[in-house]
Image (cartoon, rainbow, N blue to C red; front, side):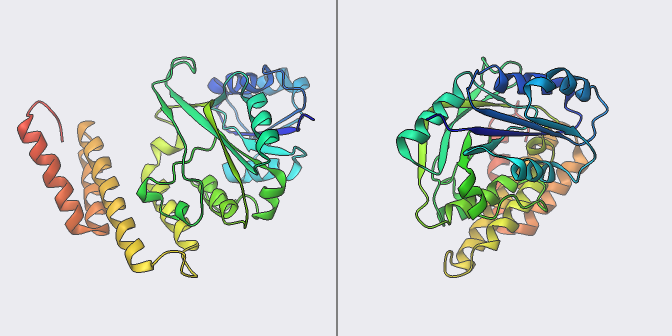
Amino acid sequence: MTPRITIVTPSFNQGRFLEETLRSVLDQGYPDLELMVFDGGSTDGSVEILERLGPRLAYWESVPDEGQSHAIEKGMRRATGELLNWLNSDDVLLPGSLRRIAEAYRESGAELVVGEDDHFTDAPGRPVRRFRPQGYAFPECLRFWSGGFRYHQPCTFFTRDLYLRSGGIDRTLHYVMDYDLYCRMLAVPGVRVAYVGEPLSAFRLHEDAKTSAFRGKFLDEQRAVSRRYWSGGRLEEGIALAEMNRYSAMSRVFLAADAFRRRRLAESARWALDALRFSPGHAVGVFLARGARRLSRPSESL
């Protein structure tokens, strides 16, 4: 039997991408689809798109909300599907992905079905790289800095039962609501994960994306979420904190270097000071290593 799949799309003033996102879901021809859109009161033409596609949507609204997490939470509350996910209004599903998800779910019985994800700038069919998730396990997922847990939201589907058992979306989070949800899902005893070794979604790379524009805030929130679940001997706090601080310092060094390349000198200085705050010794070491590479290749920026 074909499982019903619910897709929730949160959106706010994303009219330039919204129709492509919705058509990537609707045009798959999946027989039991529930697609709902929760728009935060856009003023950029998004409502006209929703009115035009409205007959093909299970539900849509355009009213002020409290942000992305709130929109997703509202959608999940209304969802009737056996399998759920949300799709941000600048990303797309690839052709045939819903049928592939349904097949993997039927064959495995897993509560989490995870595919691969193409990253693109101009067209989903011309990806610039492919992301292959791995390591969906608890408590390993808490060590986000290690690289062992590689997750991506558009290609991670889950059962409605698992969503409810894990407590659902934390609407107080603004950047890593997905990471927090997956950590709680993976902590559910006996949870099963099935991997689909092909791309199911495509993630748009652009300057206005939250993961690009607010990278520092994203990392700060991820640190806080990870630490929520360290108790009970899941991680040794002293070692984990030192590792996380070194990772945070290194990330800030990269952000400082990127700002420097863009000639945003005040921003670069702020990131550099932030790196020193997390782990002075490690930050200095990374700065020196990058400086040495630049001296050996003078044409490169920091």
